Image (cartoon, rainbow, N blue to C red; front, side):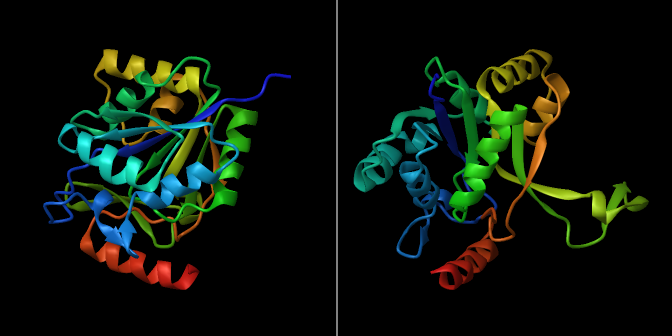
Amino acid sequence: MKTARNIAIVIAGGEGKRFGDKLPKQYHDLGGRPVMTYCLDLFERSDMINEVVLVVSEDYLVYASREIVDKFGYRKVKKITTGGESRQESVHAGLTACPTGIDLVVIHDAVRPFLAKDLLHEAIKTANATGAAILAVPAKESVKLVRGKSIEKTLLRDTVWIAQTPQVFRFDGILEAHNRAEAAENEATDDSQLYEQYCGEVSIVRGSYNNIKITSRGDLVLAEEILREIG
């Protein structure tokens, strides 16, 4: 039986404009180490991830190689590549940088430091069975569909989930989706939207509310609290 070959693409190309600091948030200190090292540690330890592609901005290519990959000894990071102007372009760059023979690709935001091992593995197992799976959590609050400045509709909260990463796909499927989106100049909010449009259904794996995305200084304060709680 063929052994699955899975790759993780870590998206770390953001400039951190909303974060309000010269140093992008993925390189910012959290608990004495850069934010992005938490997910890289997990992928390095996971027996379900064979290698990692790290996508960074061109300005931080040397920095990421020296201060992240070399300094922390990430042997699974086989490729560091530069991203594009948008997250979608950065993911596409990561996909095209992958070697041949990949079965599943795990796409993860570098600024989500608290991904749990069991959830990562559950997402991989689900995608292996169905073709695509993402982590998501149910919305806690009422959600409104708004046009302009008016509420058009109140959505049923029980049917609304908040997408997270990782998002896991059969490699050939998500690459095709990105290629077709690029050709059509189709911008999507996340990778699963492209897969839905061009390939088919995406399964949901219930994630964790601790799996936050750090986009502001307030998020970093919350991350420090979560870090203290989980140890």
